[in-house]
Image (cartoon, rainbow, N blue to C red; front, side, top):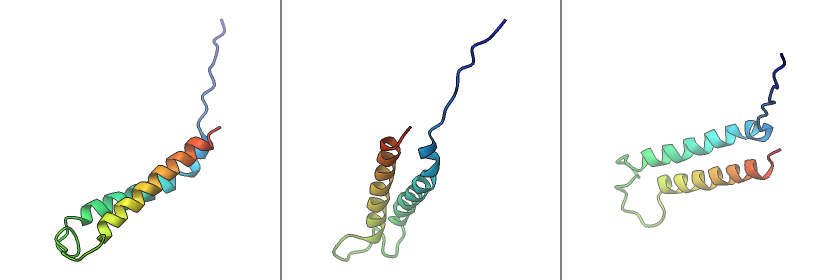
Length: 75
């Protein structure tokens, strides 16, 4: 009696870029938590983009760009 074994493959590209995903998520999460800090966070009244929001935006763009790179280079 023989069984047909299906080959399970993983995307090698995703494994290479997992560090990029982790760093971009850390940047977004740290920026989100930093919004609620009393010093230079949400309570800051200066003009312009605050650094926590900038961190979240950079992290989000980095995350989406990495996901697109993973999708684009998948095998």
